Image (tube, rainbow, N blue to C red; front, side, top):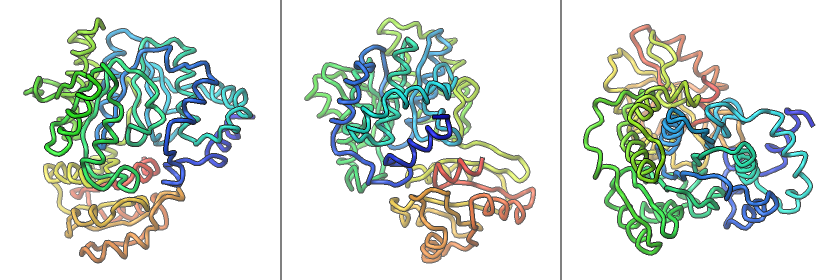
Length: 407
């Protein structure tokens, strides 16, 4: 097998949540437990931090990994989804896993894994844990894919669990109330462990406190310790990072108390240089200044609200929004938040799970949103560029897959 064939096998032969949605979601961890056993339980051979949440978990994962890197550690980083290259999901000190390592892993385990009928995500979790174990990382920062309790990553016993925030997303799988979603995320809280809650929220905090009590875990809330982050320069320019930075700072302090060398210089440098250190992209990423063009993977109610808050802070004459989403989102919630005076370029990413651009356009009309339908993300973005003056603003948003094709 070459690299291209290997990726095709992973994508096409196995269910993948990011591409096809709920059909790829497994109701328990049996597969992952069997997978780890076949690999001689690599998840027990490195230290880890486990991160869940609706929004912000990717940002917190990358910033904390960058801080640990700056502190001199060999740091594994597992995140999802990727934007441009599958290998973005698995990195050590910012360097993506080599193609050869992926080919070898699939060739070696293909026949045994097929007997278990693994999903794409289970395959990638196994690959990441095996790679981090073999490369002898000092610590790995592991981001959940979806939820927490039933997520394939939830076989690790981390030094620290972090839950960033709770808002509406994936209700068809996680529950249709904030409390139910919080219960799923709370599944990463381990017995006698430590859990850090990034954002104190009325409905979810009760769930977390109750779960921590059941597990005899120590529960901490970031805002109880961090009141001011004005002197912290962040490489990620989204204003919503103000909600994520406190979790990184408190997590660093917790790791310091556990004996890790988390000095102030490493913390400052890691947060400031996170993009260079980890290759993180797609979070309020400025693509052009004239017209001001920004890509942001906001894809749910809370994420869109934060992105629109920042739009209001940037001087512009007319707002152009390149918008695409996936077919299992509550798109009406998102559309109801969007400004009626913007010009829209509706599109869909080239994945089966994408909501058809014409369907999105028809639904958007009900909310008084006006614009055109693009044949692709590229054509929609080109149309926005053609129509925008240098004093206008272009926002590309609604889905990580739309942003991936745009950048």
